[in-house]
Length: 95
Image (cartoon, rainbow, N blue to C red; front, side, top):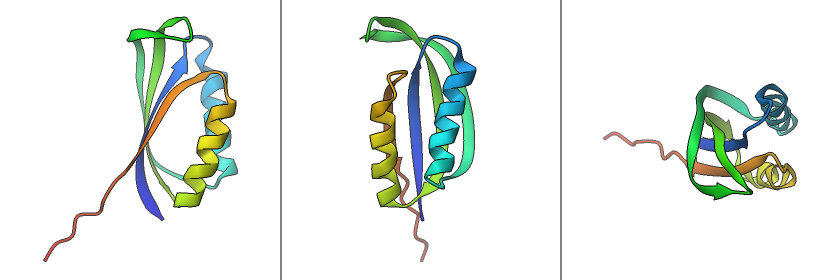
């Protein structure tokens, strides 16, 4: 298992069902959520799909590389997920 940071931008509408969709995708792919931090409603720098404001969410998750590929496919099928970014966290090695 590898640690990843995930930042998501969700459409500006009723946020509770959208959060549940994301949680369902996590549970379907058996992802371990280490940290769930909502960043709230923010103004976008440019329009994304005619939206000017969107909800930002930050997750720290633990998953395998194949699981990340499956999750990307699931996220692409959701019209309410405007953008997402996975960043692999490298473990610091000590001498």
